[in-house]
Length: 385
Image (tube, rainbow, N blue to C red; front, side, top):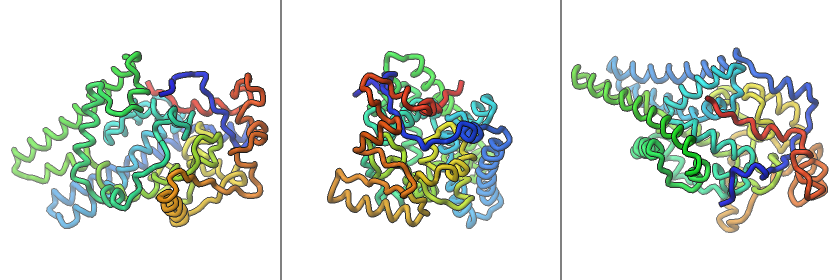
């Protein structure tokens, strides 16, 4: 595997040009907007969880499955909260970013330490294997069976969640990507990873033990529902998350320096956009990763003339279904997004356009960073302390 820590490995990504003052305004972070997004989402998760527990404790068991499904539907977007907070763009205050990334990382079993290391490479080297091991094409986990397993409830999901956390708590990795981003010659990074996962295991073990003890002592078995609501809500009700999150890169083009060709955006209703932390603007997010999620719609309006068609959920999944069907007969097929007449040429097999956009060096000895004025955006994934 290539050395993903090689600082000389640089991709000069094409980004739709923006006036400096416009980009500065879009990059502006707000504690108030951050609290509205973060606090609103956390309140929604807590409310659906509380409603689920209320139905069980009050004896309205016929309501509990439906409320749990609603709770899981909201909770499965927890990873999007961790994702945005790891970018350190949600709040102007770094302390608030650091605080909430740990809150969501705990309740969703989302390892922000691992995610930080992986996602930084995903942004710098999007769909350029082996340096991007977070998303590798072709994506083959979009079967109907996989959807139905995640849509409602999988009895083995909690086991796999706990097992993965236990392995990382012991500093063990079963996949090559994790070993590459946490190499043995960086023991401090591994110790930090182990410490976080041990904290998560300890906290959720206390919740489970307390719930079992309360059920035994009171004889009220509704207490056993508490771990399912508090600890394991990301393991059920994932139907909406599946529909949203699996659109980002599937079937697109890898090894190109153009986010318009390797990322996909789509239209969503405002409430789903809120749950998804506005990641339906995924091409825009990759192009300008320092823009907070609540400013991505404005960014879209500024650069829409240079981006592929903005399809809705149905149109997006029709496109994906077409791609997956064709890949069954042509495994190497990759879809190339058509661009509007107002867009700059796609940077694929067009060296002159790549040079003009600053995506590659005209002089092989020149640095790509010198040719791309926005290259620093690639490093927008921060490392909360």
